[in-house]
Length: 414
Ligand code: ATP
Ligand code: MG
Image 1: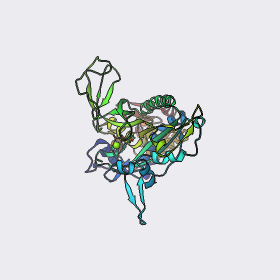
Image 2 (image 1 turned 45 degrees about the horizontal axis):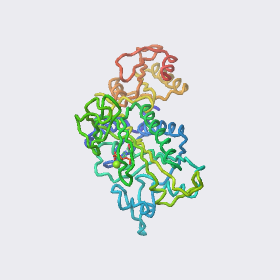
Image 3 (image 1 turned 90 degrees about the vertical axis):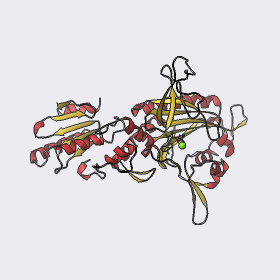
Image 4 (image 1 turned 45 degrees about the vertical axis):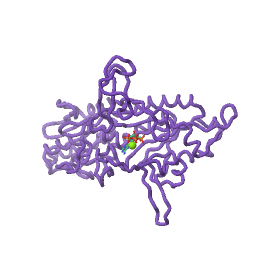
């Protein structure tokens, strides 16, 4: 992509209303644009990051035999009345049509996926069944001041699993938890797993995956000697208490952001929508359901909160919008211009995803500042000084190296 043509250039000044690092840097670097509190447009660079995060999630979901579907966000009121969500869920957006019909905007999709499977599963042999989607969610959040960490419209992966026995649910629940940790790790994040009561309709146990960051809205207590971790909102414990699990260390407190969670929904929704199937012993049973969310757009914000310095963003490899950022210096000189173009073309032919700063009328200092702000992991420079080599620099290091094109290409795949 030629930077001169890119829609969504860097801004010299940060947005006035940005109170969080993710909102400020993502706006200034040209990734997102706030339409109103909690609602954002993803510009070309931002959409590439969002798509990359979704790709990682999708790859891992497919590996555990989950099947991707796409459900509507506009839902009939009737489904939400059946589950009592219409009156119980305060964040549910409700709409009235010109003919006075009422609708809900999807804040979660149990109300769609459960009736969807009704009639399509009839015996335990049809289970387990795991369906997921990656789509917008709408929530009437009171606080929407954390940039893309808390949207009123946000991108989520939601998976729903159906099982004939509690044992089979438990088996899949463990697989899902492991997969979640793998996903976050691929995206450069270490998540702590808190155990919580299910909230809402269920008294069952749920797990939250929390990444430590000061920008997060959750406060957790954790132990340094073992994996114990709880959200203070629900815990009877407090800072300095002895760890309830290993009893070796005192609990520490930290701020974090919930990037995902998994719930045991029990038979609630299958009972609500009257789904019965034939069980292993020939009896009629209600399937057991689990739901598993990942905040795709929130993860993008959390990455920025964790990976930034005074000059801008530092994207992890799996999330970065482009693999390399090629900066041409002195492009008013014909020879350098053609050499830089050639480098760009050759790298593209080697399938390197590359952002090429081809602007002629911009100073080297400004180009380097933009490259740091945008945060692509590798910066390449072609100039009068580089001869038949390319200057190679990683975003998080000071050191530069002079490499041949072949050596640069090799670096992409390490
Ligand atoms: P939170 O406690 O942060 O409000 P939640 O418990 O309501 O989250 P879920 O309903 O389980 O979360 O949604 C699944 C995932 O979607 C969350 O783990 C989080 O990563 C993300 N998420 C939830 N609400 C928002 C939001 N308003 N904006 C962006 N992402 C969100
Ligand atoms: Mg919430």
